[in-house]
Length: 380
Image (cartoon, rainbow, N blue to C red):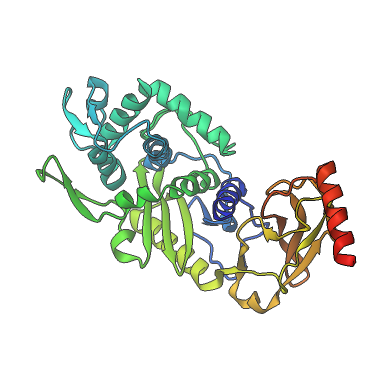
């Protein structure tokens, strides 16, 4: 039963789409940047947006997707953190932010991830890309494939670093989407929350380019970026009281403005919204099973009933149960038996399926006869 619930919850989390607000929420101040989005991670709800689908250069925020593909490979066993990565001439030639890798140098996946996440090493990003896919070009193809799978319709990647390249564009909305996907891998926080560290046995020092890690309460990441043409960009994440938010800022005029804009968005979200657990207003009664080896089956919620709500509207939450009175066997584990509608005021916020907690087989003819005899005996 616990395994079923966990599996259903995980599936629900993965498929929940980002739902854009029609208007920026009341009270959210305009952001001093080319584009911005504030998203709540668990539900994918967008709490604020400003030019969310404008196609802009992301600079090194591109590496959110690079990190996502590498972490997916680590988590499914295709890569190990202690695997050694050999540096090619192409990787060593990268300009911009780097950790000065030399052709032929070897470094662990773990240290390469530090180099990318903490100091935005372009050379380390390319080395990881080549190690995983064989070439940067093949890796970029995987990046665009993953972007399509995530519904990132504004995005076209040309490289894995974010160095200026014609046609290398994305949007604040799409960056929030891929940032949300990356944050589903808890291991990423081991790297994005580092303030100071080192590689090469302590010989090369690293200091995080994301100043929010030190100066903003609950900061969990995620990635900075800047070039002359892209301006100053940031995908910032932070968690407080069990709710994690993602603030994306693109094309800010200065580094300070991008951090101030992200802090303003995050603080607005934490001040005005919360995730709350919602439960049925009454215990779910067993459902009668017709012609089943068991007389009843217990209905359960198919997924978490946590909803995102404005703090000012917590008292407006109500639920409505719609449950079938009986079901004919055979009943499959997870079979839908009804649903629970969650209202905030007069609006349905979420509809959660109610399912059978176990399977119930159909009675065979001998079983029906045996039950008939048992009923006669008890009646007598």
